[in-house]
Image (tube, rainbow, N blue to C red; front, side, top):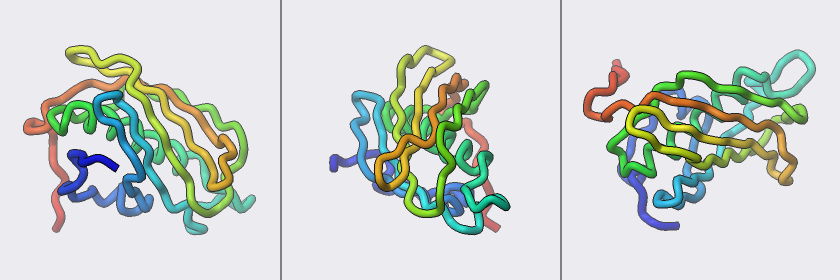
Amino acid sequence: MISTVFDNFTAPPSSKLLGWHLLDARPKDGWIRIGFDGKRDFCNPAGFVQGGILSAMLDDTMGPAVFAMTEGRLYTATITMTVNFLVPARPGMIVGEAKVTQLGKTVAFVEGRLTAEDGTLLATATTSARLVETAKAVRYDER
C-alpha cells in the first residue's frame, strides 16, 4: 500500500469504536478501502449489525476518501446521505469502499459500499458533503 495522509493520523473516538482501519487507498483516484469490526455489541435483536451502525461505517468510509484525495487539506461535513440496505450484515469483518465521483470547490459527491468478509454486498450509499478546510474543522476533545 502507498503512503497516505492516514499514516500519522489519530483516528477519532467514533472511528475507533467502529474498528476503523485503512486497508488500501489510491488517493489520486479518490478511492479508499476501510476495514471495520462488526461487533456483536452492534447487533439488533435479530442478530444483525444495526442499520445505523452500517450507515456510520459508510459515512466513515466516504469522508476519508475525500480527506485522502485532498492530502488532508479538506474535511467533509455530510449534507445528505442515502443508504440502501441490501442484505443483513452478520457480525464480523466488514469492508467499506468509497470513490469520490466529483470534487467541487465547496461540495464533494461520493459513492460507497459495504461488503461482508466473503464479498457479499451489504449496503450502498451516496453522499454530498460540504468541504471544510481541515485547519478550520472543529476538533474533538480527548478529555
